[in-house]
Image (tube, rainbow, N blue to C red; front, side, top):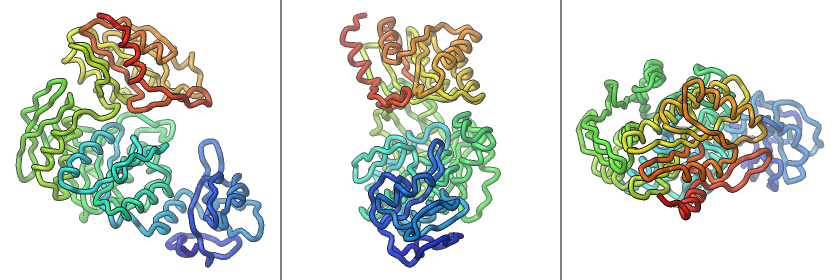
Length: 490
């Protein structure tokens, strides 16, 4: 594609070079070998792509997109824009010919529930014989194959490439988890979403957004990009706030909830650990729903998926049959070991709200002790301290015994992080021990457990690595549990 066509509908200045040249690829990684490519200089959290432009040229770049002037040879075209992240998003949409316009793209945003709702929608759409791809926390699913990704929502170039590949392989739907980072950093900008789903909002990622209002505004950005339906959880305070500010007459807003009046709601809810049944009420009909997962949180997430599917013309039989097939979701209240009344459950809960909900779901089904192993948030800001206090308070109040350990400590002050969490447990009269080594903490929980106890391993969920300092090491909680249980006797 000609560079001038990639730059279509952008405000830019040609610093030097020719925009009538052919560009064969886009990249933001200076290490990638891509001949005749456009390299976008992105200022990251630790590195600035403007300092890597010469390396990109050495690897085949013929044009550079910048925010500021850079020293570069005269034979390289340099284009200046006000915001290279915004420019990268627009360039990627242009280069891949607006692939989202040829798909039914459903975006899911919120602090918790995105992955579960995506999974529920996938099985429903499978039942309706709709070819469906996923872009989210667990990777990118395309043609029923998983492509690992580093971010919940990939960078704009990768995102548009995935959408283009889905379009080319004749997918009907793309289900996309849309993180607040992606909205703030313009990764999903200029993407057309047929439907947006808002789950909930609780304190998270405040190292980026600073305040809850900023966090909310970042999430709300998704709903400026929808063109058919907005689906909003009105059991959540911020969901109610979002409904009040959505005013596009061309996009229909529909609500879901359990406790508040809503367009899609549930009654006659019956819970067990392995099965939940309820009656769903839509604007047009009611139906019996069975899911093989515990707790109100999954009823709420089911309602979101039901509402989105129903609005997009999926019949109730496909919805019922799809949800009935769900047995577990990787790292989401997933039972990884069961023997009689004893269970070990893994969950991604890494916020105060998510941890409280996970413990609340498990409590009615535990006849012995509810033992919690949880990692603590590695951010030294005031928001990080608040989060550690909140999670420590929840652990003290909702678990019978806690083992405080590490999540992904990276380069942060481990001793301070651990102490701030244990201080919160002490202030709230919680019973606990602290073990820095997460694998050892898991083994300790299993060793101390009785035959009627339940162990919740919270924070890592589906993840299979741990970041310590600069090293990313293999770390599978499922493997650690299976190994430890081989020598466990009750």
